[in-house]
Length: 473
Image (cartoon, rainbow, N blue to C red; front, side, top):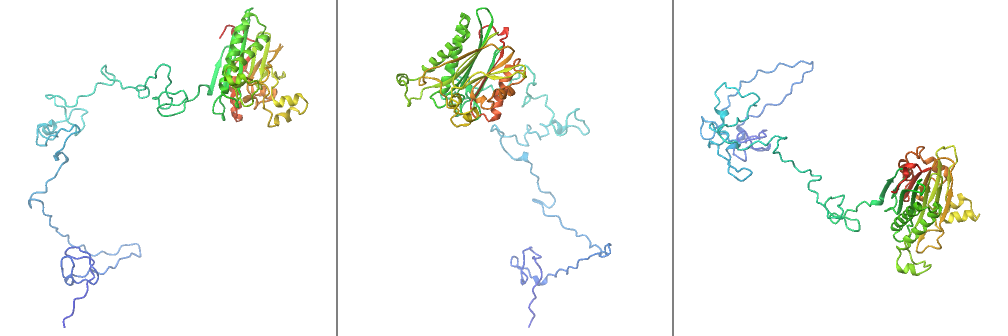
């Protein structure tokens, strides 16, 4: 009985390299008899223990491997394909020239570099691999004119070149710069809400400056101001500042404050040059402001004497008038005027009394000032301008300061953060008389740093009124 061939330990077929199992006797792919294959030698790795390498066995003679058969002939190497040999079209759809065509860059007749005599040098500055221009043929790709040439076409600035021009009286969106702004303050193209003009306002004349800001909590600015200067009949200057605070619980408070500030300012500018006493002129200005706010109310509001269900436009008002010798103050509501001497060793003062629940409690002796203003009802006003207001009682006071100083006219958006005269004087910069606009900005910043819970408006007037302030504005 013949002995069966023993399984081989080969892992791959010596003929076709097919993977094998340990029990295979024949290759499943090519049928090679695995019993005739010599088993691989056992692996005995050599490990050097003393740091030296053991003697290696003599190297086996190199095998002279036959060269692989080439396509087409045993003597000719396989052809090499280049990208230029593949037909195609250029970006314009035209057929690319064939390598055998004289116009092809690689053709000897089309590339002067290809026929350059041996040893010939390239022109100075000409890198290797770059084609020489053909002087006898027109350039297929003409060079662009120099950057500073007369024929250079300057591209339009993308920031402004293609912006549409809005129609007369229309506003362009600050976000997309393409759509027009509708009457509600939104872009008709992208819907972006536009910043309101009254969110932050500043104005400076020679002897007065004012700043108004929306604050950090309100969605719009309901304050308004007006500043101006004129001359009295004797030629001496008179400087005016009017500040109004819209009542947020009323209808259209922003319109009420704007109308009141403009009406009061115009009334003063009309009366003072005619010789009207400044205090009388301030009283008439407040009455004119009240009439302007009343005119904003609807017919139903004007008909009813006191209708709690009617919510007419309303605001408060405070004004200051400075001449070379007089300081006139007038108000209705809880906006205030402060006096801050240039000499800070002198005592500052608050020149107005609030038309508010807290002030009434203090005046009646029912609470001290700290207790009254700590109450949640403290800022409920008892006097305002509007068709639904009770009897109008303008307050006017005349002062004759004996030293120079600055007059601070402000809404409660500021004095909530500097309530006492001493606190206000500490917030006013030392150079306020020389830099009223800077001082107004500092005071608005003081309120915003404190929380900015309300609209903030402040005007700063140096006293006495400087002579250069004369002339209407």
